[in-house]
Figure 1 (spheres, rainbow, N blue to C red):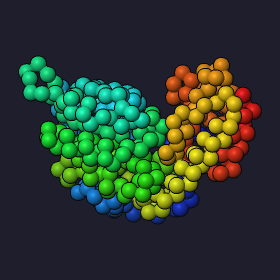
Figure 2: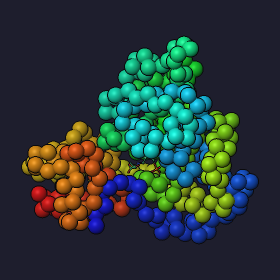
Figure 3: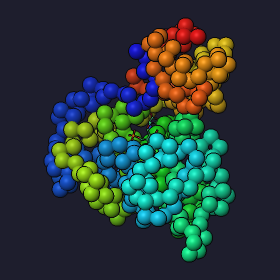
Figure 4: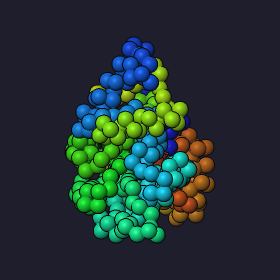
Amino acid sequence: MIDLRSDTVTKPTKEMRQAAFEAEVGDDVYGEDPSVNQLEALAAEKLGKEAALFVTSGTQGNQLAVLAHCKPSDEVIMEDNAHVFVYEGAAMSALAGIQPRTIKGERGAMNPEEVEAAIRPEDIHFPETGLICLENTHNKAGGTILPLENMKEIKDIAQKHQIPVHLDGARLFNASVATGIPVHEYAAYTDTVQFCLSKGLGAPVGSILAGPKEFIDRARKWRKRLGGGLRQAGMVAAPGIYALNHMIDRLAEDHYNAKVLAEGLGDISGIEVEGQVETNMVLLNVKNLGLTSEQFIQKLESQGVLAVPYGPYTIRFVTHNGISQEDVQTALSKIQQAI
Ligand SMILES: Cc1ncc(COP(=O)(O)O)c(CN[C@H](C(=O)O)[C@H](C)O)c1O
């Protein structure tokens, strides 16, 4: 099987398994797991934030951010197809009593003026805007990169209105490798950041939530309340340390493979590649084949290629550490056969 469903399917490298085996551990609820502490310190330093918290998933990191930033009844501004709005089971409403307020973005980037217009003025009738959420890269838009200028403009507006900004940076390192802009420069236009160790960086488990120390202390307490207190978690933190030290630059290979895949798909009649490939995702439209995305995915699976639907006629392919250049060529010939 050539698994192009997501970069979440990456398996740990043998070096990560060795790091897990050798990891020094302790009880992380008491703050005594040396590997978790090392990972959190390394991540905070890379992002230029005061502190960081090792969490079980990107969803947990995002939802802890909402819980630690907001109070029940707050409104949170986010892009219309943001992961926190589409793919987290309405957690912010269910767990934090939040009202989401969405703005349609352009390739994932919200218009700063529309963000400012969505901020609620003081009025006994209105909810209070408690947080602005950004996403970089933007998943549903096809792994697109939020321009630094866009993030800066939104942060300036947020600052003016004294509203925090959280970045869902599940694939922030993909944006950084694609643009050459260090992650701490993106993070400078946020109050808090979540990024995934378990996606393109290849670790088996986990994400990082980073921000001011007092915020991270609150998020840690929320994680404990939700039963997320970790014990000898060094065994899964150690692969994350390896990922941050050795798996960032290679993301460029995933970006290259995505571009090669998109170019090959563009040569297949009836298939239309949506937008430009900016990182490790390719969106394609199969409407001209007279098939729905679900129907085409079934045909692909029978040929040994896995993908996910991203709309009635849109399919998403994601390249990652488990996909080689040869896999891309094989996938292209199998996709051709599936038609
Ligand atoms: C931008 C962004 N933020 C957060 C998350 C959540 O991460 P996890 O909870 O899956 O670790 C994801 C995962 N994205 C997954 C994928 O792309 O296959 C699925 C859709 O949930 C994400 O893409």
